[in-house]
Length: 378
Image 1 (cartoon, rainbow, N blue to C red):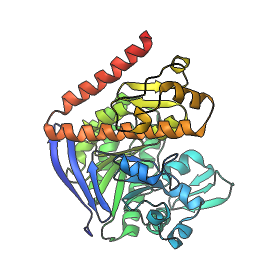
Image 2: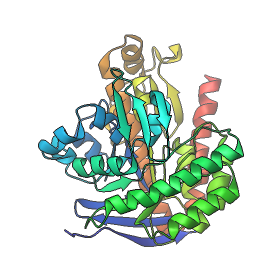
Image 3: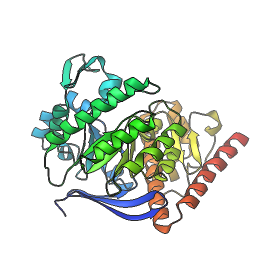
């Protein structure tokens, strides 16, 4: 065990990086995918299942937890790790994205944002200092600055205004965070699809000497090519010896392409949300279990998988569960999806260590394409 937070770069293949983040609650192998446990739970999964699939860290969210059950209540009950029976690392998002995307009648000013809860309409105030306070009460291991995330496309002046505000909030967040041994505050690069604004944001955040850096404001409506180009232009301005986190991304293809550009950490609701809606991610690509073609298909999603949900249940049975709206369908497909994502990350890490990342990406994408071609031909 250690009382320090540190990042070690173990191998590099092109821009793809294999590393480890060390925290008092455990080691995070990077590149890492963090299952989203927004309100203290990875939906449709037991904590032990999530861990057994290879997850070193999960994500929680300030916005949802401050509204229900309340950060002070979680602290009184021992903190989020004890509350959710997850003793390993947790990253908490600051709540800024949810305030901007979910809340009604929000009012933004220099000091923070006032908003109404999407649950009951009650009024709340979130500032950089309050977001850090909530994350301290939750006792998360990696904490995020409060930022303003705007959707693309947007006017350049609006992108620059939000980016500059986010930089000022980063300074306030870092000051409020102070010195917390074994924990980390990450800054968030903003700047939309404007390369010069992204670089300015990255350089000024790097000068703050934070323990890690996230790239925010992507996967919010722009094409994948724009996201990848933005990463390629931005990442060289971030310190090589600090972890880099791409927020809210994404599909398996987004992940393998972003790793190739130097990203170390990911989170996304996609594998859990897709599972609840009948969509499976596999080494054969995406499989829509709502499709009638699966009604009499006795084959599993992936006979080579170590995950029982992927290996032991027929597509016909999964199709039946999804069409009958049975809860077990969402549970099994979520289990399958998270198993595939963690298997993908393990493959990514091994390929970087072996210096064969480009071959791994080509083989992985070829598997998706073969699966898609077979489904079209069926």
